[in-house]
Image (tube, rainbow, N blue to C red):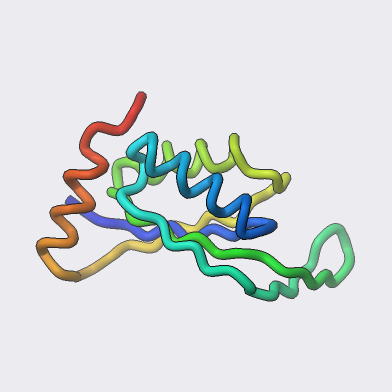
Length: 108
């Protein structure tokens, strides 16, 4: 099993919690960490923008990355949400097995 982290930004802590809960309930992620109080500076529609966001870090399996990304796009308030998949090369074998077991029965 190849584990992946999905790095996602959201408009607020509340949105991040809603997104995270949905993906864990649907077993597309074993766990989600929500980090609130981030400031983002970015180009959008020809202007430099700055705003507060929350970050989600989702732990999942490689086979679920596309499905989780699609689900996040469906649920997200942004037109073009940040969803980045980062492969996990190593880790605690017990924790990696836990990710696999908690996502083994994801919903179709």
